[in-house]
Picture (cartoon, one colour):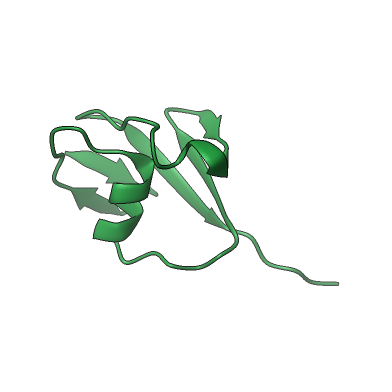
Length: 66
């Protein structure tokens, strides 16, 4: 299992990447920041960055305000 935002448990799949995890959660918001086990993952690496069983993932929705 992968824990996301201390709220969701997602079943791990062989070869899972950050991109696939976001697909499984139906997260499609454009302005996201991702951390896996406390490590920031740049958007350009989402398609290849592996997510392992037991990882702790944080998905942050960036918003503008003032």
